[in-house]
Image (cartoon, rainbow, N blue to C red):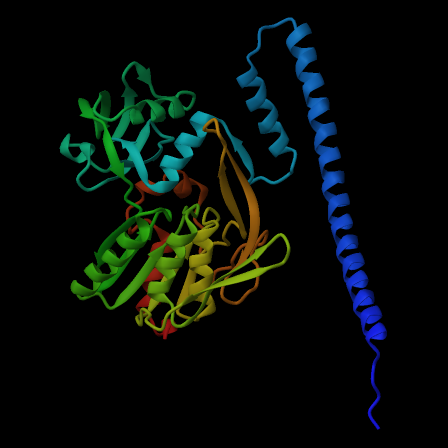
Length: 399
């Protein structure tokens, strides 16, 4: 005989479940409300204290101050207090410069430079294609010793660098030392698409590809370099990421997608432990490869090195890399300033972090302090790390 539940009992049960659901929802809402209220109270106390300090300084401090300078100084110290070397506050002018630099869109004369310790000048390591510098007759190996009225020394180096950049369409006067001769040159600045990849064919059908950084133009330039190398008959590849500080996530992912077989490229882990993996397709570069790195190879430059190592596609030559396995996010603020703060860790395909430790080379080749000081002036024959890479790629070790 089937048991029947009375209408009254059904109503009671429905009411019970409704009340239980309401209480659970109300409790969750109250918990969330309490968290938000606690957060609000903390923010209120923080702003009250900041406002009081601001008023005291504005009313009583004996020297003149501006609210903009005070705000910039405070926010800079606030972010510095996080204890993270990669997080920083960017004032408006710094934000503009950072955005231009990381995008690859620059205003200048179109040269890659380094400090020349011998002369104290600006050493030109490379002149970009289709640049104002190339049009003006500037050559790799030239040394800029004066910019306008600025005579360059270790104290005025960065001031001179900024003076070279200037505004598009305006001329800058340079004095250049070329061997024993000083040459005065006027160059009209222009908007420059940063040349982040340099390809050269070496003896023995070796493609030497130097990746200076990863910006908005790197992926396209890298693919173009690979195609040029193949068309030139190159059958071996040396990738140089020494002194590469890293750069844009999309750029390094696109570059590695060109080289790696199907599988993970990068594993990104956020503050809550949530993981995201970006993957490569099946097409890959099926040639002998060597990567050259050093202690200044960081971030995306390290990911490039680690990824080729993890897939056993390349041998690594040089010294242990920098050891930066964190990702920064840029936040623009309403007044044009910005924040760059660490928001995630990332791991290479093996999912083994190199943050704080770096990547050890398969073949350690240490460059002398003297050679490091004149790194961009070294000939290929003088570059002991490159010579080791050539030796390895021409040997059976690479197989």
